[in-house]
Structures are given as structure tokens and as C-alpha cells.
Amino acid sequence: MRLLFVIGNLSDYHVPRYEALAELASARGHELSLVEVFGRSSVYRFPQDRRAAFFDSAPSNVLTLIEDAGDDDGRWPLVSARLLAALRRCAPDVIVTLGYNTSYSLLLLALKLIRKRFSLIYMSDSKADDGRRFAIKERLKRSLVSKFDAALVAGEKHRRYAQSLGIPMTRSRIGFDVIDVEYFAQAARAALTSEPEIREKFALPARYIVCVSRFVQRKNLHLLIDAYCQSCVHKSGLSLVLVGQGPDEHAIREHIDRRGMKDRITIIDSVTNADMPGLYALAEFIVLASAFDQWGLCISEAFAAGKPAIVTRTCGVADELVVDGVNGFVVEPGDTGALSERMVWLATNAQLRTRLAQAAQASVRRWTPALFAKNVIELAEQLTGATVRPRAAAVES
Image 1 (tube, helix red, strand yellow):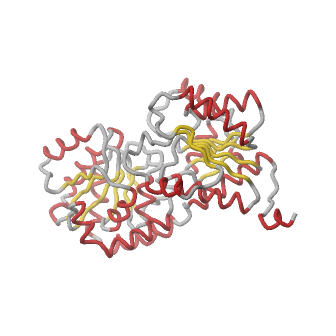
Image 2 (cartoon, rainbow, N blue to C red):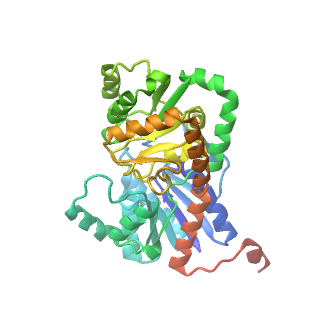
Image 3 (cartoon, rainbow, N blue to C red):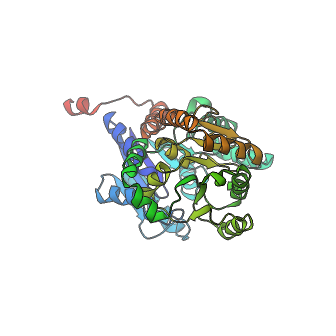
């Protein structure tokens, strides 16, 4: 089976997923190729060290269509021509692509419907409660999504949403939003040996809650700040560290000033992926108070670093990875009182934090690149009826 992986930009998050997929595909006798549409990310402005290391290793069957552009540069005529050429060279049996409404995914879907030469799997972490849904828009979306052959999504609630869009449960699997758990766990442990340097580098307080988030309205950072103030945990020396950037940063800083919390709430607006394990390792726990979040990769990362979490019910990780009272707490979005109360529980009970942290580390071990690879290959083999040809058997023949 010839498998083609098409993605806008192979960011640091996607590298371990693709590497696990490449390893499993090879072990099962399949041929895997990668097409990266753009060499520059329009989402992540900081250096992508794992991506750089991946391409420096000169991997085989890997192509970037346009090295010096991102998806916001308007190069789609050139992208279309080069993607078509890549398809002719690869002649894939199955294509795995990011999203069902990206420009390159729509092109691939059109080619699939016209040529009928390959099956098409989309990857997504959309779910039903990602903000307000409109019936007409959902019907139009269903008419599009149902033309795909299968879906790799984040979790079970995401499978149910894919089903509502026309993808049968038999043709969807979970495991899209996985992280390199072992990397984060090891890096977090290593960070503890460099605690003074990390604290100095980021001017970290002695004790803190961490929130990693884009500074946009739906992340509910104003509400998080209000809950933190209401909890009064700052009086016992527990600070709040907000890691992120975005269009609402100025408004958030003004809100912090209005609440008189400038000395207790710290904003760190630029942190590389390599530095994140250290910020998790030194935190007490993590909070994600979003109105909705497709998943919440920061929660997976914090769990790998051994930290419990408080999340809202409309975060993708809620009830999938974060289980209320087991490895963290789940609250209703917008409920300042409940969020404040859970913050007090974790801030004042070291034994509770330890118990939840241990469960967090245990529960995230499933959500690894190996799960991603296994379920992509399973879907692809199901669609094509491909048989397994292990490398050793292939060589002998």
C-alpha cells in the first residue's frame, strides 16, 4: 500500500506523529511519503526545532512544495500545480490530510471525486460544542465531509461529531491530538535539575498556577483572572503565570491592572517548545478555562510533566483525558465560582495534588504518537484491504 501524508506545515507537534507513522508503515510493508505544502508556519512564529532537526536528517520520500511561504501568502495556484505533480509521482492508494476544509484538502477531495484513484482520510479535532452551530451550515458541511472516506479525530466526542457529518463510526478512529509523552516527561524531569536557571530566565515566581493559551476571547482569560482573584490563593503566595500571545493581550494586561494583580499575575509571551517542559515542571497545576477548545494540547503536556489540571467541560480533553476527581477537575465554562473553588482545593492540599498528578501521568501514557500511527494504518488498511507485508518477509521474497 502506498500512503501519502499531506499537511500544511510539519510543525514540532506533527513531527513525532509522522515519525511514528513512518516506523509502523515500514514495519507493515507499506510505502509512506510526506508532502508538506509550506515550509513556514502561519501559526507558530517561534523556531520549530524538531521540524528543523527532522529535515536536517534528510528523510526519504519527503517534499516541501514551497519552502519560503506560509498558507497566508496567497500562493495557491503554484501550490495546486506542485501538489498535482507530487500526486502523479507518488500514485498513492490512500492520502491522509489535515482538515476537511483546508485549501489543499478541498483540492484533494475534488481530485478523489473526479479520478477515483485513491481513498482520502481527513484529520480533525472539531466537535459539536465548539461554539454555536447553525443547522444550514452543518448541512452544507455534512455534504462536504461525507465525501471523505474516513476520519482520524481527537477523541470519542469528536468521533460522534464526525458521525453527524456523515462519517460512520466504523470509519473513524481517535488519536489525532497526541504528543510525544516520553519527551515531555523526560524534559520535565531534567528541568528540575536546572530550576534556578529556568526561574531566572522567565522571572518565575516561587509558586504558581500556569495557563498556556492564545490570548483570544474564547479562552476566557478574563474569567480565569477573576476566579484567581476570588480564590484568594495569591494571599498564600501562589501566583498565576499566563503563557501565550494574541490580539487580546493589551485588554488582558489592563484587566490585571484593574484587579490590582500586576505583582501576582505574570505574562510570558514567547516560549519555545523546548522550554515548555520546564514551565510545567515548576508549576503547581494547570488551568484551561476556555469557552471551548478542540482539545487542549497543553493539558496533555502538563500531564506528561506530572501536573493535574482544571479544565472546562467544553475542552476536548474533558472526560477524554481529564477525568473529574481522578486526575484533575472539570467545571462548566463560565462558572467563576466553581473554577475558583477547584483552584483553592488544589492550591491548599498537597496530598490531593500528588494523587491527581500521579493519575495524570498514568492516564496520558495512552495518548502517544504510537496511537496515532496505529489508527492511521488501521484505517488505511481497512479502506484498501491491504495485507501486511513485514519488512523481513518482503526482503525474503
